Length: 261
Image 1 (tube, rainbow, N blue to C red):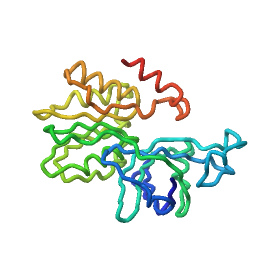
Image 2: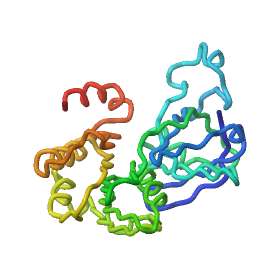
Image 3: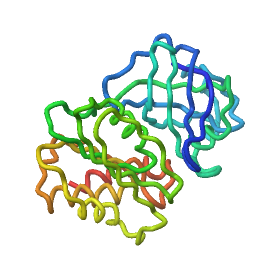
């Protein structure tokens, strides 16, 4: 499946929203999951491969020009208008996905599979806890947008510094704590410390924690050990790891997660 860039929006200094349309989106089936994602295949700059491509089109293509698969959360799927919105974290020329998003122009094509996904705020709980950095704000935003007016959520949103916040609209009652790396002590536990210092609402809640690996691990440990929360049904995932490129993290992620128990 593939689609073309409709337009690009600058959400914050380091977040871009790429809105896709056309291509084969008429065949796209949306998901009820608010962490729904596509598996996109980004072509390195200068690649001789053109979208759409098949497996046989990659025969003989040098590794440096072959597609790089990456998972990206669907921020919104507008089935009526056939528009698919994906948010990208951008850091200059680092990474294939972010650099593609920065270069993206209307008409550029992106090939992908999907959607996958498994989380959606549960109806049967009293409130929802969501913790995520820029890599997870698409899923956080989609989750908040799905809430009914009588739903309640507490959000810890991590960004680089003041001025990097984005709109997270919701019909529900949402308390958002913006956490800034520029004001942190640069420890692995600073996000968990912020969560720990907050009084939780009464009642049952579900858990969504996604972002940098060490920070996610610390939040998970706090919820498990300090608060005694049953995390068997929680959605917890390390999207990236500090001091690792995307490729390096992909190679060790499975082993790292297994080692965490």
